Image (cartoon, rainbow, N blue to C red; front, side):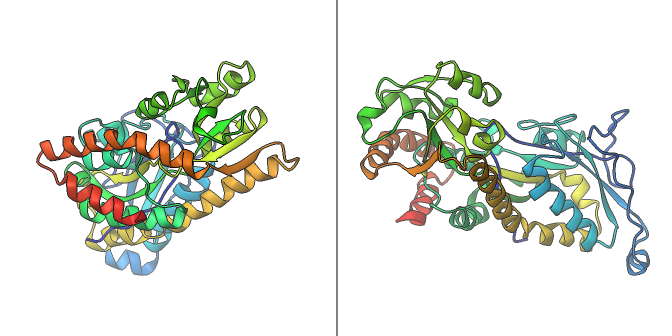
Length: 364
């Protein structure tokens, strides 16, 4: 069945959710929904739904996000509401928020072991398990310059490579990009020499790229970036726009330089046993509603940028493109890293050469 793909936030922001009761929902023991609001009461199924199947199916959804976050309000809740609406109330959700039963890097495992039924995860958290997706997260990969391009290109890639790979362990509903990445700095970048000797936060995956560019790299978790900037521990940070917004980094830095050669995905996944236990028409509802995720992702991206721009109306923080020669040199630095990852795929019996050729076709 054809599946379609979309996006959301930073490498450090990922999610999950859950429900109890129902014919299909997994057993969560004594766990209760951890949320800022009471769980929504199930909607009464329509008469047509009753005649087709009187059962209300409860899906346990786990999210790392709070119910007030942009990701939840712009992607997760609209998707759940749409599924409930299109199913005539036959599919209901109870939300376990803030990582109360599963968070980034555990949602897929939780769908497999029955802790939850559905949620968003990043396949790259499972090192060595989803090599096609790991290739996407390799420094130097460019999946497009706009969110629309990234969504479309990831959809194409997932249909051929990362989707079938993920389907081996869970029902792969869809895959979508995180929000745009930036090098957030207190200094201007006009040439590569401006990077040398600087101290930057970066995730472990991107440490080699920055180190080879002459940057001293430290690994600092996102909630500590604000104080690290303020205390001059760092003068730059590799961050998604979601982190710049959530942690108000625009207050302690001056520029955000776009990094189109940095990419990460997220995947909406579901327990295979739960999905296969649904009637065929409800399986179709879930898969069809997932096709709306690209729109939800674009809404999320617009909301985050609008929120940041509204907070920096005094012009004290600027979004910029990296100079072309700087971007070209960083891309060159990344080539051996990409070649090594492609070789790893080939050695595992996968089509690494074909996968990188498809990726390169997106921007050539």
